[in-house]
Amino acid sequence: MKLITRYTDYAVRALCFIVKENQEVVSVSDLVKRLKIPGPFLRKILQALNTEGILNSYKGQGGGFTLARRPEKIFLVDLIEIFQGAFKLNECFFKKKDCPNTNTCPLKKKIDSIEKYVTTELKSITIASLLRG
Amino acid sequence: MKLITRYTDYAVRALCFIVKENQEVVSVSDLVKRLKIPGPFLRKILQALNTEGILNSYKGQGGGFTLARRPEKIFLVDLIEIFQGAFKLNECFFKKKDCPNTNTCPLKKKIDSIEKYVTTELKSITIASLLRG
DNA sequence: GCTAAATGATACCACGTTGGTATCATTTGT
DNA sequence: ACAAATGATACCAACGTGGTATCATTTAGC
Image (cartoon, rainbow over all chains, first blue to last red; front, side, top):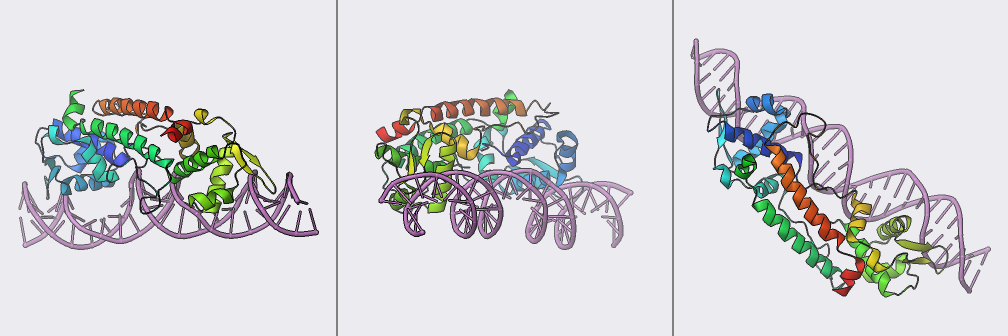
């Protein structure tokens, strides 16, 4: 059970690197040299970040990516949702019908409260805050 | 990303039911009638709970399962570990070598602290506490 | 205008986990 | 002896993760 997958992890690393280039256009091959991440996989990740409005992309020779938002506005929870789907720790398995079992509902309540805590924490983490330390 | 799977969920439901039978032997077919869980799947789950020492089993006609521990001693986190493996939200993807990227380590720290919180919460949940409400 | 360098869009694949089913063997109460 | 129950295993489909491969398109620079 992983909280973050490689997609998200690689995305964080790449974004941190791009931030430090300070609005210079960064290509996949630049990133591959520094981050030791498989190229085609990283391309897919950056393309997703582009379509989600987190990166801008520039085609053609000399092209690559730049940040589309300030790093304070890129939240870890957004990245998780892009690559791992909506963040929901708890799904009632009997949601459609007959979850009348009074035993299981306290479980749901507990899990819900854990989920709230984790979500709040994840929302407080941004690329900027990760770079600060 | 699920915190608990159906295995764990079904195990909780079954254990709650068995507790309420108060040391009467409960068979899989008894449980299937009440809990609407696929029989063969539930059997596999109960067998696992038996080999893990959470249930006692009795073969032969009139056989079935009883609790092997008091419900206060059955922790949700134990069930999760039986069915979903060791509870570890955070794994450094670059653990072997070169995780020299100073950007990613603050991430690890954050995830670690979230993991600690969740683990503590899960350890505080028992079958007994779920039955209380 | 040609070419090389870059992304866009897709399709594909291997592997592990989840959520089951099926089968045969064994035990035990009646 | 028989039926009812678990034990042990093997099997399977669907899905998510972690990739690779390919072709199309755009663009800078000669």
